Image (cartoon, rainbow, N blue to C red; front, side, top):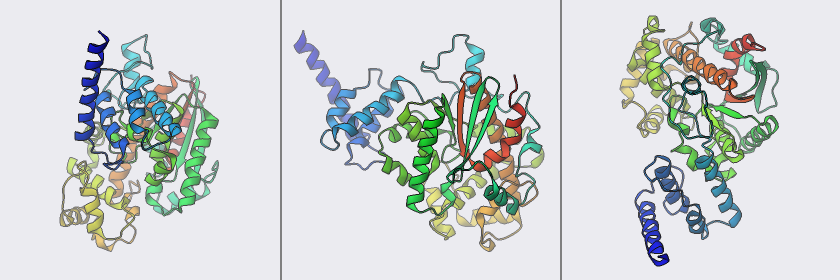
Length: 405
């Protein structure tokens, strides 16, 4: 009997070896990195393609030739957090869980699509008048960032007592748009970890690197890669979204995305915000343009566009089409702008691209507040880690909810 059992086990592991060879297509690990193979395998388990228990022992044995025992145990421990504790909860609507089950168990695996009513908020202040930057100019925006209090040098911190829980909101200065020295990025990474350790949140609400991509931290994609990375590898990724997710995984803290889906954004543009005449193509072009602005390593527009077009999430357009769209919306040539970042700052009273940015910000902030409020119904300590603009935009709403029952 034992011989037969060992025979079937060998067949099972042989099947995994085939998966390792065929499916190693990681964005984060090279082909000769053993983690590349196991990232692919972990994704298949996560997606339910393989129903057996994840073979942690085999993975640990496989990694022995490349990593020391401490690193292997760390990788294994973090993956156990992901698989066993189900700490990735970002694609579901918590309030839907509350409505559908009186015995809702956060430790159990589940999959929910965000509810269609996620943009409808009760007991909230008026969204349009609430956002700091909607009717402010670019200079006011930066002045507020510079003069903001409650800063530890790496990010700004707001604390609120809302309902029966406590909200800590960390407002980060996006590393994506700044030229930070490597030692400063190291400091931000460590300061973020220290703050998380200090606050000990029951759950974290995170802003993905690309806010318009809900899948950035979906359980079966980047979270697995982050769980396998050492701190220096995460730091080299160079953005605060990855830093936050990595610390959450390392500390075993559940985390969710505060973002609406593409469908929810487009639905809102066609209903609540239809009077602003922002078409689906306008939204898609703006997302592409925003990606181009984020490519700070080069000033060449074609190179910026090429980098964005290498990612299939963006609409395929050539530079002439992007330039024509920009001129149609803003009345100026895209090449005449020295500061393209100023063209995506949320502001209803500026250029059309700023109006689109402002509208998307309103939709995103509405979703973010709902996710935070819903989680405060379930947990006593919630931490949100988002760009500092979101902190400024939502202060009045959070203050209005403070000490509310």
